[in-house]
Image (tube, rainbow, N blue to C red; front, side, top):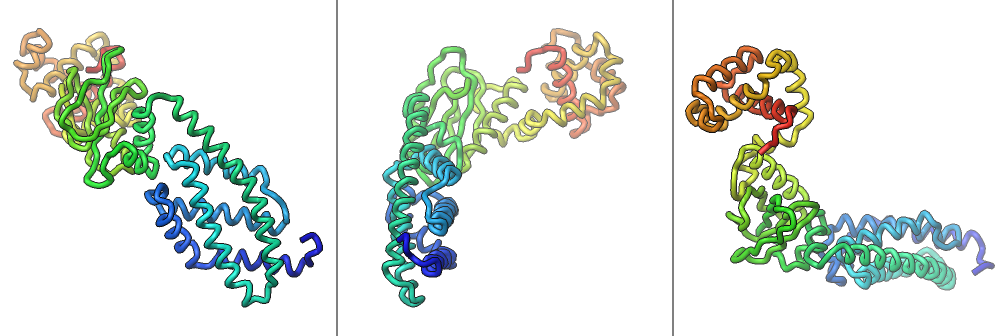
Length: 377
């Protein structure tokens, strides 16, 4: 190979570049990979095509320079190995997918080479150099995959590891759902609760396949049917249904539902759609800051009375504007609630009897009480 003329070598490199660039090649390769290697069949076609195209581009550059892989190329390979490990794709399947792609590309190259007058021994030299490059790539790929897989397995038991991958969303979630026996179609539900310290995950029955574990200080579950109650008491946020790849979004929505339920004193399982406005409010700290800043003068005017006024307005709104119920909740006279609501409206200019004004009033009072250090239910 060392004696090969530069014209012949540039010709074979040009051939490989043209083959890789053919419009119909990559879709054909992806189809072949997904039909041959079952473990990667659930990955998005764009995912497989993107990584395959990047590997081929790196290999072509190496062939053109007659060298092995660079550290930059190996860094990409490490990332690929780690990604596939997080997605739950076995290393054997990763290597198998690469082999299927290689075979398709070199088969196409042999077909085209004859028509371009490229001698067989030149193509063979290129294939041998490619094999040397690929061997180094496979070694780094295996090492990175095993390192990522070991780290993931050490983080907890199998259910927790699968749950973490499922809540990542995307292709990782699709694979995790299949591993956990959750259906790919029909939708999944995510529940989030705040467990008592040290409390084990409660038993869940009659809800089909389910994953339930403590995760990042919360009790998080993925269900195949909507749970309407959870033993142990307290509120829980629920979101769904959605497909496995959307689990990351569902987790965020379920947590927003939990926050809204806690803020309004609700108990039991609360679907995010039932507290959509409150969930949106709880998720916008930037707007809350703007709201409190706009009414800073009223806050200062209330002085030491800001807490009882805010508590009265909030209790009145949360009691359906019933002064008697609000007064019982606060252990004060109904006229006291009326006076404080009127005082609030006069100083802030917000009309809590208006639907939109009521929302702003509730949000502002909740923010004021939080600033005073009152625990938010």
